[in-house]
Amino acid sequence: MARRASGGAGGRGAVKAARRPEVRLPALEEYGGGALSPDGDYDGLEFRDADFAGQDGAGARFMDCALRGCALDDTSLRHARLLDSVLTGVRGVGTDLAESTLRDVELADARLGGTQLHGAVLERVWIRGGKIDYLNLRKAKLRDVVFEGCVLVEPDFAGARLERVEFLDCALKGVDLSAVTLTDVDLRGAAPLEIAAGVDRLAGAVISTGQLLDLAPVLAAELGLRVEG
Image (cartoon, rainbow, N blue to C red; front, side):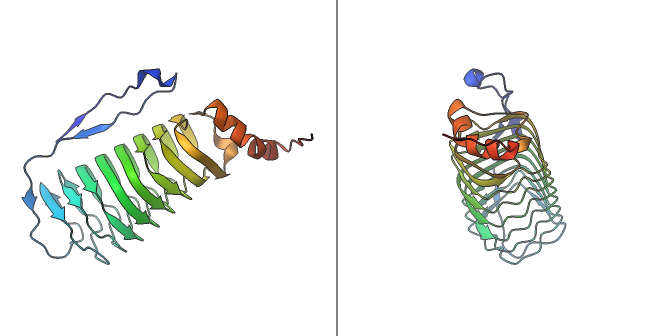
């Protein structure tokens, strides 16, 4: 089972730090192979280099599992529950995790594109390394989530609620923050920080002085402010 870590990088300022998961897996049994099953129940299993492309695991529950090097192209995991689990080196385009639940999950070195997580709930999730293109988190709920050392290209947070979310040594390119609600969101570690939409929704976030200067033209445009030399 995962042991909950108490968050706290003390020198990060007044913003509350996210609590990270510390997933300590039991001795795992090797997955016997075969296709995923809708509403399947997977407990204490290791999935290594499995190809789940195009398979239907909607509604499945993964508890105390490890997925390593698995292919998830067009895999349906809608309404799935990933609990106290580790995903390492997973890859795929069009993975459907809409309205799923991720709790006490570590995702490392992923290579994903067009992943659907709209309406999902992420709690105590640590995403580190890798690259995720066109991540759809519209209307999702994120609490105690850390993005570290990863590249996010055109992630969509429109309408989402983020509470105690940190971006550390990340690239945020073309992020959509339209109608987002932010509480204790630390963006200081995002470089670059490129906001395509929703710059008016930054209340509840903290940025650095340098980021403020970089965002000045976008903020001026949002305010209708003319800047002339």
